[in-house]
Image (tube, rainbow, N blue to C red; front, side):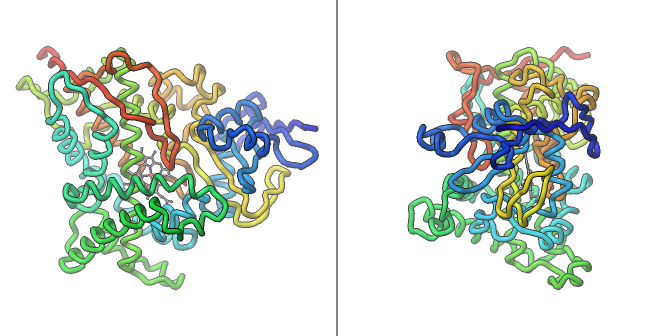
Length: 490
Ligand code: HEM
């Protein structure tokens, strides 16, 4: 037996009426929202076979805005409506802890921003925040352009480039330089290996007894530990060097080492961060800021290559901004150019709608509570799947079509704010959002002003995705790059 709840409500910033209010169906026997049954899925093998992102999207289509299911005994509530997502991530945040994957990632990340709980999280966030302020980020614009030009300098005329590995390397160099003012060139390989091992750990995090599996001498666990040891050596060495000559180098590491926090003393924490805390935050930022940005850029480049009319318009905008008026050449980007590239901003936003690097955001109920008449038991996992919500046709007609016009100011104002949340929301919203958006737009401008992108002949128009901790392309993304003509001098 099922009953329908359809409640029109206008929570802060949301414009839903009864036509777009959350559709919630309750199974009257269990008192929980309807959803897929575990055993039939297990017997069919779907639990192992199905792609997690597609599974969550299918749930939203079949069962409505609040879906309940179990995964190996773990209770999961899936929220598919902007109003429910606002309640989950913002209004009811006090009922929640981090999701399972982040809790189990403490083995690698320690107690950094991504993994720590309150009140430590708020304290660390307050200390790290100044490093991400607009003025501080503005200083990174030229570094981003310089690294991007160095990368394209290696490309050959009409050559084939595997853009995912290029973007991973580029994003890693940028995060290393801007946040730790260090050239990670020597360490790029070990960092990339450690990140890869960490991402491969995701499937284990969902298994029952995952905490015991983490202790086993499995090759994967050994790889994660090896990668972690190499990263630790690098980061502790940088911390020691900075402590020895503590001037402000303008990067995150300086900010973390200098940060003092009077409020934290009242809460019983040391006023300054210990080496271990600084290490946890550095590692967190390195991991959080690298693969996410690289994936977003890879998907954006592939979408541009497969949509020549969008690419043409974006390239024209980039060339107009970056062309040196006196010579027939292009100058490097700076942070001031970010505001002059609105169409590229729309392109990057639309790419993250279709392929959100963080494809699902999770929390764990830290206590039992009632939500819209539903008893949320302690330990229940609550998820807000960006991948499914961003492809909901109520907010995005023809949702699978790439169309940057969806991100004009007028189009954005016409839908609920949390119909789009690639950087999540609430007190744990991405601290690097401003940097990531600027980085994305400036890198795309640098590439497009100079290079035309086309898919390899025979490549289809679809790209397969692999939803791990981040949403990645499932295989290499090869594009043909050809140098562009400069526009006529005006
Ligand atoms: C396109 C690129 C990026 C995307 C899509 C992205 C997405 C996200 C999301 C969805 C969260 C929230 C996770 C949650 O609520 O559970 C998050 C948190 C975080 N991100 Fe990003 N991120 C990106 C780039 C960056 C960059 C460039 C940095 C730093 C340089 C960064 C640092 C962080 C940190 C430290 C957190 C934890 C914040 C907290 O809990 O207080 N991210 N990111």
